[in-house]
Image: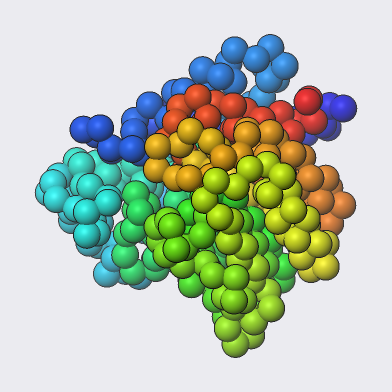
Length: 318
């Protein structure tokens, strides 16, 4: 099945520049590894590749505090040190690189909402740990948080599904929207007892008006595809119950077996199948509206297989 509106991706040196030097797990090679895989697949030749775009300060401040944006800009100019307690190093131009991640994600969401395209994938995005007022876990600005605020404030959406299968809990999104009933949050991640950031327990269901609109599923270290799909059934039931208008999918590849930082043992087929089911759900409830972002993943082969599988599922060319 070929889609009427082919899937688009964002790629370019500006996105590739978001990564950290000197052997950091979030390396500068992740973007190019994915593009190499996409370019090697004849079935994906039709994909439209959009150039990255930057984000204005006003866009960043849809989610982040002005003081934090100023802090990142100042540290970027200094060119050394850390943005947090030691996970997220400063390098000259880190502000600009992070702005291209956010800007590309927001433009993608806007193109989807304007009906130009139905589905978009961005490999270097999904920086779900950054909080409104601080960096965390390799994440400078939270592009997902900015996109959610953009959709809420500019398009008035009432039900946006944020679905996260990265091995790490999407704490920046969960706590950033913990009391917001319009963000339908579903996150499958390694147990907070064995992995950073130590949050996302199953009893974390939202607060206030957001109570009941959040789903956190803990996976034991060593969990395999069979375990994932049992949890995934809960996610799909949750999403079907809430009938979202837009799907934002964080498909971190660090949940695939062989990642150097995590302990889950999925195959890349978990990502392929999850993306296919979400794409079908988007067609059913969202008029096709789906934005997928790469998130984590520190084994380049896993990145290639998992993310290419996501793109093939969104494109219906399995």
